[in-house]
Amino acid sequence: MMADARPAATLALLAAAMLAAAYGFEHLGGLAPCALCWWQRYAWMAALAPAGAALAAARHAPRAAAALLLVAALAALAGAAIAFFHVGVEQGWWEGTAACGSALGQGLSAEERLRRILAAPVVRCTDIPWSMLGISMAGWNGLVALAGGGLALRAALRQVLGR
Image 1 (tube, one colour):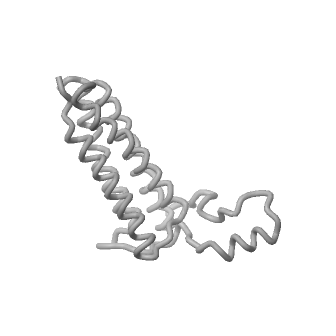
Image 2: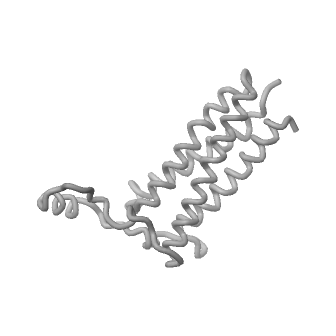
């Protein structure tokens, strides 16, 4: 029995597209990411690897493919949670993490701190550098991650339960 490869392919393509968009906004659009933006990227990276592996395993190892799709779905849903947390920080509903402030590190000399400050763009997690239809980039990311992760989770559970 072969697992349905479409959910894994869809989530892998979605993760790759979201990462490409994020890097495009950064390198082509000039929008430097904040700490929470990076965490959202890490979640997409964490979803991409097992989704790709699930796609590769679908034909010959359907149970492994379903388990890998489950892991990918959970990574995407974790990304949605991070994105919605980021939206709350942007809207002032709650405080961001310590990483939302400074990424200078501990134990640096005053000269090294100054050099890092002058070299790094200041990107606050509370800033909304881009929005569409009143929804920030973090909000769109959360909606896409929730939809993609939810659909992949549903497909993975169907495959595991044999439905």
